Every structure is written in structure tokens, then in C-alpha cells.
Length: 480
Picture (cartoon, rainbow, N blue to C red):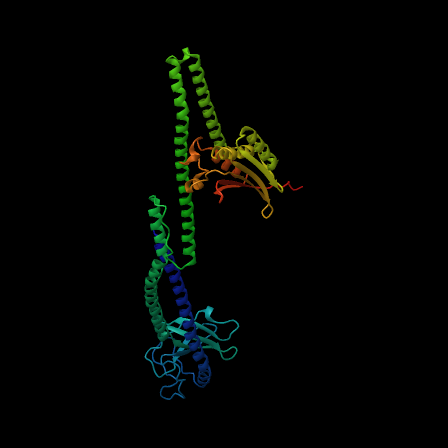
């Protein structure tokens, strides 16, 4: 069963219960009002009944023959005009409960008999109103009373035929009115539910399309109801998250495929060279000491190249796993100064300078930070002409509690693609910078810096050359 049908049934049942309850209340109130009016008429007729019963003893035996009424020939007076013409009165013997009835309006060929049960006699004696069925099957509203102690009881009764007719008409009217109201409201409720649930159907249709694989779809804002807007917004947010995660997964898989392809290519080159040198050795180079020395030197060189590549790949894999590194307070200026001294010693044809201003104590792994700085200097030495200067500077940035390390060179700089992809793995620019290497050095720099909650960037200098910047947060002693 659909949600719309369940809601419609629930609303209609609630409506029917409400209509039934309200109709019952109206019916009972109307019935009570009619009986109250009759009771007032009965009570208002008691003085007349009292006077006339004291003046006459002409009563008819129970249920027999003809009777002389108060308004008949020779009767002393007329009953109240508010009484119906078929109203009756009577006398009850308290001991035997024998009933004698009289007509209040002229002669009647047959006066209905009322049987008064002991339960209808009040104790103590007073006025008692109740309904009673007469011998002819008609209903009467009866007022039973005692005019004086130790005297017979007297009653006056008004037929309820007209009252029953009015109540029956009211009941029929309520039934047909309730059916009409229920039918009309069911149509209205159906339209309201159809309109109100339309956004849910739209959401369901969109979800069906999304389940087929199209994550670009979104739930349209088809409703002004806050609940529907919240549902649509939540679904759209979820879809954006799923789509973003899917794109990231696809991008990661693509990077992994490219990484594996590039790694295989880079490893294939030295392996091919080593295999070629081994073939030359088999073909007779082993018989020539000079050729053998050349082959062994080249094999060693290619092996060293493979070793460096594998170590770089292992380091990148370690950084990708986001494993916790051993951190301690490290003076970045000291590490950078030592690296600069090493490179200055090994590269006499470069003018490498170092300067530091302010605090440079960071929390990190000294070996990883040393390798990152070494990779930047290796890159600068590799792509700058002999005799050029390389400046390494460290500055404290007090505004955000960080320090910045910059490595500036005087080389040709980077083109636009180089600026965008320098830190990508295996990226090699098709220019003078692409003469050596496999393109993992700057990727390692980025991985190390991000592992230390820092950032790395590159830009070209207006005077020429490239400038690499590393920003790291300063060390904060643990709270005691």
C-alpha cells in the first residue's frame, strides 16, 4: 500500500470518528433540549391537573370503554393549550399500583394504558420524569408526582411521537450530511496529498535515475515546504559528497595507474641498460679489461639509479600511508645551514648562500626535513648554469606563528605547466630543466611538508629564476 493511500485512509478514519462524535453530541443535545421542553410543559400543567382532580372523581377504569375528559361536555375547564391533544393523565394507588387514566381533551373511544413499575416511583416521593411505552405501543413522556401525603399518586403524560419524528429526521440528516462531507473531504484530501507528496515522488524518480550511475543529477527544489526542502537539501549534500568521493577515487586510481606506468618506465630504462651491458659482457667484453671496467662502471651507475628510484618510491609510499612520524623540536635553520654547507662543498661552481631571521624551531622529523631541503637544492643546482647564485633564506612570520624557507635560483624559471605540475610525481618539463632525473624529488618535498602540516609553493621571480617556498608551523611546547 502506498504512503498516499495510507495517509488518506488514516485521515478519513479520523474524519469519520470526528463526524460521528460531533453528530452524537448534537443528537444528544437536541434530544435533551426537546425533553427539557416537554418536561417544562408537564410541570406547567400540574396546577391545572391538581385543581381538576380535586373537583371531579370521573375517571375511567384501566383501559376500558369511554371516558369523560376535562374538556368534554359538562367539563369544568379547558386544559393548557400547550399540551398535545392526545396527552393523558391518571391516578395510581400506592399500595396496589392500580392505574386509572383519563383524557385531557374530550372523549376518546380508547385511552392508552400506562403500566407504572415500582422503579418509576420516587423515594422520597416528589416529581419523577421518565419515558414509558403505552399499551398501544406509543411512547410517552411521563411526570409522576404526589400532591399530598398519603394520597394517590398522579401522573400526566405527553406522547413522544412528534419528538421521535424530529429526532429521526435529525439522525437521517446527520447521516447523509456526514456522507456528503466525508466524500467531499476525501476528494479534497486526495488532491492535497497528491500535491503534498509530489516532491517525494520527484525525489524518488531522481533517486532511481541516480541509482543507474548518474551522480551529476540533483533533487530540484520543487516544494516550498521546509521539510521537503530539508530532505532535498540533505540528499543533494549526500550526492555532492558521494560524487566528490567518486571523483577523488577516480582521480586517485588514475594517478595510481600513471604512477605505476611511470615507475615501470623509469625502472625499465636502467634494467634494459643493465641487461644490454650483460649481453656485451657475454659477447666478449669480459676479455678486454678496459671494456670490462667500462661495463661494470655503467652497470653500477644504472644500479645506483635504480636504488635511488626505489628508495624515493618507498618514501612516497610511506608518506601516502600517513603513518605517524617521529617528531621533536628541530631548529630548521641549523638543518638548512648544514645542507647548504654540504652542497657548497660538493658544488664549487655554484654560489650557495644561507641566511635566517627570527625563530625557526619546528616540530618534525629532522631526517625528512633534511631530505626535503636537499631535494630543493638538488633541483636548483640541476637547472641553473654554472657560476650562478642560489639563495636559501628562513624568515619567521609572527602573524601566524610560522616560519618560511625559500630557495631561489637564477636559472631559466618555469613555464606555466611547470608552475602547475612541478610537484606532480614523475613530472618532467620539456625544457632545459628536463635533462636529468625521474621527477620524484619535488613530489617528496610536497609529501614531507604536508606531513608536517605545512605548505609548499613555487613561483617565478621578476629578475629571473624560480623560487620555492616552504611554510611550516613553529614548535609549541606541550602545556604543563
